[in-house]
Amino acid sequence: MVKNCKKCGVEFEVTDKDLKFLEKFSEVLVCSDCSKKSHFCLRNERTLYNRKCDATGENMVSTFPQNSPYKVYKSEFWHGDGWNALDYGKDFDFSKSFFEQFNELKLVVPKFNLFSVQNENSDYCNVTVQNKNCYLLFGGDFNQDTQYGTLCFYNENCLDIDYSEKNKECYFMNDCGSLYACQYAFDCENCHDCAYISDCTGCNDCILCTNLVRKSYCILNKQYSRQEYFEKKKYLLNGSYKQRQENWNNFLKLRDDRIVKASHMISCENCSGDYLKNSRNCKMVFDGFNIEDVSNSFLAIGVKDGFYSDYTGHGSELVYDTMTVVGSQNVSHSFSAVNCSELLYCDTVFSCRNCFGCTGLKNKQYCILNKQYSKEEYEILKAKIIEHMIKTGEWGQFFPASISCFGYNESTANLYYPLSKEEAIFQGFKWVEINEKPYQGEKVILAKGLPDDIKDVSEDILNMPIECEKSKKLFKITPMEFDFYKKYNLPIPRLHSEERHSLRLAMRNPKILWKRNCMKCGKDIETSYALEKKEKVYCEECYLKEIY
Image 1 (cartoon, rainbow, N blue to C red):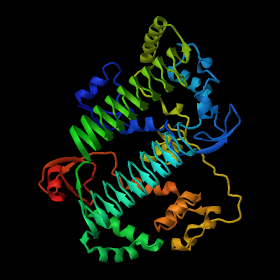
Image 2 (cartoon, one colour):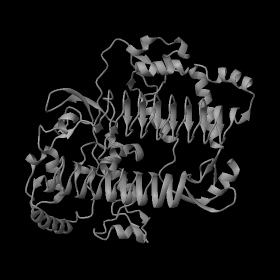
Image 3 (tube, rainbow, N blue to C red):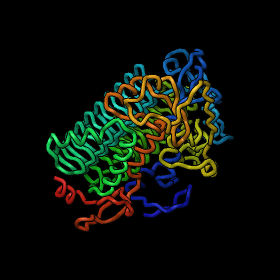
């Protein structure tokens, strides 16, 4: 069945299974892109500010700037007993819309500075759990001595690493697992001491290679003796920035000519999307692991029965139109819920159940707009509010962008759906002017003025900011980072960490599927590789025959 998006008007396909999720809501259907923008604009992962805690006066790192209209508490204080979100509770006013009243509540209930749980010496990490000695990780858990990463897990002593897990001593990678001492690696598993590799498995000591399985001492997919390989490695992996850039350009050309499987799926049944493992009956899911009956979702881990739910994980079930829901059941139209059940239109709640239109609550039940009710009172009022929202046209819609705490340009939405200021405002999103304080020191190093070879760089660089050659933003090298570059003969980067992240993000396919044909056998396939892409796209059967 084809429907028109209620927001942008584009046509999109809706299956009978999709409609079943909508039976208890009005059919307020929006396309996947509009849904994702609405979800992601509520989440600020990586735009960080220095400010003071409004409760203790302590300096802290926060996703909210000092001039934010919200009260912001240090996370430890927010989760403590020093305040009570029920103190801000209010009666429902049937002369006003629900979203208007919810926004009024959001404006007064305090926020926490970062979504950071049980981290150690990792003050600049956000939406993370149990990291140690980490810096600028976003959405990554259980890492140690790791810097500049997104959605990375169980890594140790790595830099510039996204969507990867269980790697050690690695640099600049996407979608890799169980690698050791590798650099510039993409879609690889169980490799060590390799550089500039893509789609390789079980390899060691390979440079500028693709589509290799259990190979050693290869360069440009050509076999060398061990002695020949190490002689060439001395030149290719020296500490020269110029040589590294030449390697990177050669690698991009090599990668364009590789063979790829239509989708990155392992042990999946009846699924569509990309980067899926151990999943069944899933449609249009990107980055899903151990999930079942999930549709139209980005990043789902251990989820059952989810629809239009993003960044959902760890035992969540029956989740609809949500963002950042963990360990929760029967949750809809909500954002940032942890270990909850039976929620409607809630934001930032922990260990709560049977709540409607609440924000900032912990360990509560039968609450509406942060006001406590008996079970009977709650059920009666909830039914009346739903009836009111049906009349106002709000029932079944996700939160409007106007209630987001962040500008579109601060939010995760701008990573996946970049918009100009004018486009964002036209589409109803907020926009903020991010003014960085001017540097007060004596000297700034221009990226183009850095020494070509890491051997010529002294520890003095730790005291001076570098101007990114692309964005012109200033960045500094940390001591741990400097030691890593020295150890692995890597030149000092010329780009700010956000620009490096953008480079890696561009190495991944968009979260869109196209219908095309296997370039080997002609079979119909669905893939995230667009027709204009240069790779050779094979169905799974042809890919396995060719590579293995």
